[in-house]
Every structure is written in structure tokens, then in C-alpha cells.
Amino acid sequence: MAARVGGRVRTVGAMTRIVMTTSAGHRGLLLLDRLHRRGIVLDAVLVLAGGLEPPPARPGESGLHRLARWPASAARSVRRRFRLYRRRRRWFEARCRRVIVTGYLNSRRLERDLRRLAPDYLVLGGGGVLRPHIIATAGSGVLNAHPALLPWVRGCGVVGYSLAAGVALGATVHLVDAGIDTGPVVARRLLPVPPGPCALADLEAAADEAAAELLVDVVEALVRRGERPAGTPHAERFPLHRLAAADVDRPAHEALAAAGRAAELFDRWSPSAIDAAWALPAGRPDRGSPGPGVEC
Image 1: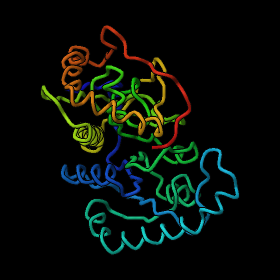
Image 2 (image 1 turned 60 degrees about the vertical axis):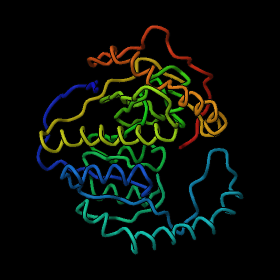
Image 3 (image 1 turned 180 degrees about the horizontal axis):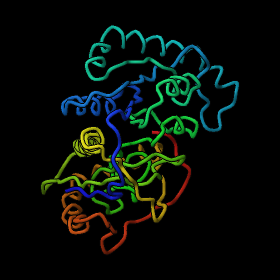
């Protein structure tokens, strides 16, 4: 069950340029594979392989600690590039017109490569949170797939936190802004779950699959029918779930999955998802405790 949130606003030309950035992790490869199955060939894929320069600073990290991480970071970058050329370059080349091995996420090298490509749309295939100077390189916007329903469940460990907060499992495509999972919502889709116990890992895999398929639907509408995605801003800001907390809370989330919570929530939320005007079912989710988040 899906709902288009932002609707369609106008058509785009056949020469719309769409590129993807990916760290070549699971979600990025899944998305690229699903695009390939639909016969969609992207203009370029930029693989985030890092480089020999110092790694990006982490939140609150000292300059000395960042320099201490430099040798190991450079070694990992060399290994990533070697694996890409030896094992996966042909796989990438079959799914896009051009493969570019670029630097770290948000690096000057990535910005330079994107500005040379001048994409209309940038599609995120994992890798972290974009900074404004990278978002600005896409003329019409940056599209991301989130494996949960926005705006209600943001951040990390979102499948488990959906179960805990009383939000049905699903996926969202949104336009990226300077926040984390705060950009205008383009489309949402509920994830049907059969009655009975489920493993949390299986639900997470299904949510990743649903997110990839929904983003492919949006890209296909853009490519084949020239329909530009339009987003609806969040009416309310919900807390951001942190990676460290997600690890601590995982046993409780696994217990909820084993108790069949996902199917119960699907049945409860289905009537709310019949059109674009989604709303919280009666008995709003537990908002939890807001706090600063980390990339995940």
C-alpha cells in the first residue's frame, strides 16, 4: 500500500541527469540493482572510496585524534579502491553510464566531481548525512530512501524503534535538506507483515527492500514519464534515534518483533494510508526523549 505525498508538479525533459553516490554498502548495491532490473541506467555512480587525505572529522573530535586515525583511514581507502577495480567495477559499469571513484562523503573531491557532472537529481545510496555544500550541487534536489515512515521515526535502528513507538513498518522517499531525515516527504509505503512472530533482522531486510523499491518507483516516474517529485514538509519534528541507543535497545526490539507486533501495527495503520493525507492513528506513538543524533 503506497501513498504519494507531494504529488506531481510538472514534467521534466528527457535529458534530466540523475547520478548516485554510494559507499558500495548493502543499501546502495540493492538500490542500484533494482534500478537495473527496471532498465534504468543512471548517468553516473560516484563510489565513496575515501583518499589519502586526512579523514573527515567526527562530531566533537580533536584534531590530534583525527590525525591519529589518518594512516588507518588511508589504508582502508586503498583497499576499497582495489576491491572495486578487482571485483565490482564491471558490475557498476553495467548499471550506469559512468563510474567515478571519488573521495570521502562531503569531501572537496566529491563536491568537485558532482559539480563537473552537474546533476539535476542526486540519489543517495547510503554513506551518511550530506552537508549543505554537497546538497547544493544537485540542481533539482537530492532523493533518499528511508526504511521507516517519516516523520515519525528518524535516525538509526528505525525498524525496532517503529515497533517500540507504535508506528507501522514501511518506507519513505524524501528530499534531503540540511537535517537528518527532516526533508520534505515525497512518498510513503506501508510494509505488509504476515501475522505471527518475526525476526527483527528479517523485518529490517524487508524494510530495506521496500525503501529501495519505493525510490526506484519515484526515479522511474521521473525518467519514463518526466514527473518531477514534489515533497511535503514535515508538520511536526519527531526525535532522532541515535546509533548507540539503538544498539542498547535492540534486545527489547527483537522481543517486540518476536511477539508479532509488526503485523498488529500494519492492521492498525492500513486505514490511515489510503490516500496522501497520512495521520497518526488514535493513540499517538511514544515520542521518546529527543537528543542529538549521529550518522548511521
